[in-house]
Length: 390
Image (cartoon, rainbow, N blue to C red; front, side):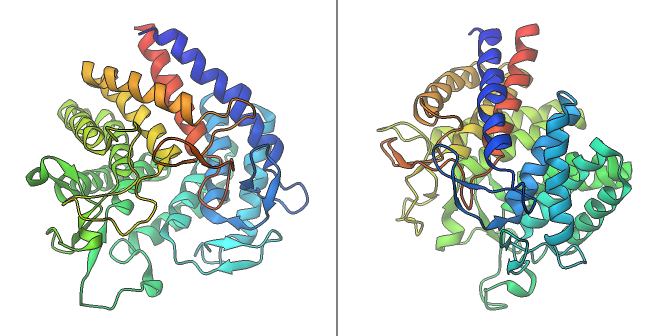
């Protein structure tokens, strides 16, 4: 495999295709913040602003400014989005709304914990880029609120009737694995280490289930048991695989090669399980007992699932030398570049049907923004570059 050629391919797509698309089309020059609802060519089709997508774009451009090159337009893009979020994104106490009007009026209450996690990431990177203490304070205060809500992420907006079927979800401990490293410069070292170990325990000891052949489930009971219900049987292969590269990064930070090996094994197990043997690509949702899933979109092929898989496979190969990771990378790479990349316009499609045909031609919407594609291209480029230098 020609790592140098592949590294150049991912880097070129990032700098000459995807980043210019968002810089040109997403910035709201009148009110601040970003448009995320962009059609195939980049035209705005809805002006609502979703906090987690606003924060992800702030993070993206601040991170690139910090780690790749101090480009003025990247910093300006990140700061204007951060200032919009600082002014309108929360209730004054860092309780982050889910969405706003174009002008910044709140539309949906702060029910979604991921508005908080991505706000913390965004302001952590902005603080690194600017040295502005106010940004650090926002990130730390938001992180404290996340920690206080770990046991009930939706707070008073939780729709579940108390005491009947209490389940805990994989998404928050998974994202915390990434968030802990993102804002490590703001955390006390001993606290950071304890947080990392807690996150690893939740992912690898609670949601990872050896008795299911090594699968990761999306929900367990509060005392860590499996639940034979729609939510309890739910698998999201992309979620599990994405979490594994977060765990690999933690394993490197903590110097735990055995943890890298375990995360690599889980990546391959979930990928083998989630791969559509007939049409190719990775299923969005599955039921661990093979029952009909409740999600009607269960068999769609989504951009982020496949891009996160590329990252985990490359990191798994880099850390363990697994030839199976390399074989799978070639297979998933071929699927991604032939199905998600738009041959005519920049940025990638997000939603395919089971056969791999484009379902929606949008480049951004309520759930897809300036995040998984550029972050994935960045991560793959850097890992491939390191592999080529070896």
